[in-house]
Image 1 (cartoon, rainbow, N blue to C red):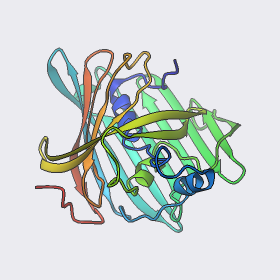
Image 2: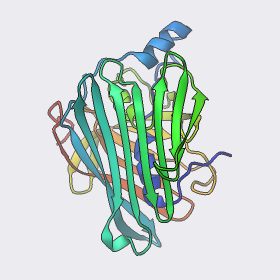
Image 3: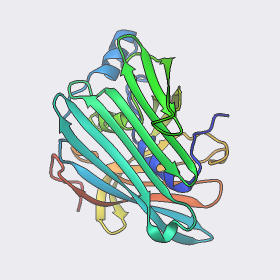
Image 4: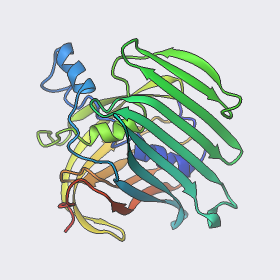
Length: 287
């Protein structure tokens, strides 16, 4: 089966954050909206009532090996204003005391249209140990083409065009798009198809809605009312067959990601919300 271009558990945790809660972009496709026109509207148009410029939240990444939890690094998410676009960013790095084992400096940046929240330009600048990647993608949703300027570095990158479906997201834009979806009418066990363009292809996966918890404890942050999801993962060199990932987000107007937990082929990982600021709404989910 296909596997992601992910070599370390740290960057896997970043991908978990970006590729789990993040993809119910066609959440109602299995339910009420059966005709293709309405499906297209779901994917392409949404009002942003959830986040604003100035929002910032930080995740701390932990790895469990032989029953010991190691704090390995953190990922910082930011929203900035840039004319008629939002500049979304997720920058991850390992802590110094972990870098003897594996060093990570990863930058994900997405420039999205304010009206649609669809990406216009997506940039990944990756350093993971000795592995490097620069990938700058320009999305043309009208022509259904993604132009990828990709290589080991920006200086050696080459341009390639790929066909895409209309209203395509990248792995960062879909985080913010999906935070604006209405989950109130979902039943426990409902499935949502998810789709995103990354690493030269479109990834179709599935997320299962697992209900709500009114007293979920988040380390260092207190108790929250939460919504829980379980994303499908792709088995291979990182995940074993049948792996279940759990994602918890705040059950309020912010839909703020709080906790991601998952076993991997060796040990398990956990991404925990460490801090937040600049939220658009009061965090009423917090007790």
